[in-house]
Length: 152
Image (cartoon, rainbow, N blue to C red; front, side, top):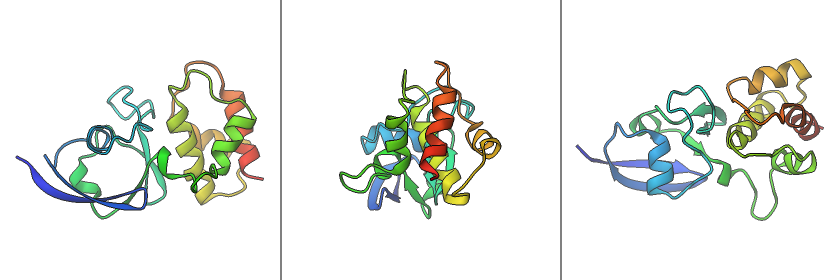
């Protein structure tokens, strides 16, 4: 059964008619055409679907959209300021930390979430902050350098 829900995504309010149990990921991709969050495992284990909920990284593939109506939702598309990339995005480019792109959304949003809470993390804190995101192409060392660069 569909219902009218209100979401705040990337600083904009949206009124949508959807089944309240629909996963947030599907609403973002299919209704709002925000393709930063990716469908990966569908089990909240790979991090490809990561979004920021009130500034904290959370996987979106199993979260019912009705449960996030009162939260600020930020996707990869929403972290840049106009044409100015977020410092984490710029650091990923500078360190050439993107390769296949599978984990990129989750890594960047997890790094933003980490730096929101801890602006100067050490390597152990960075590893812990990114541990919910799987990288299968082997750019972990570049990703660690990118997050360290963004923290300066």
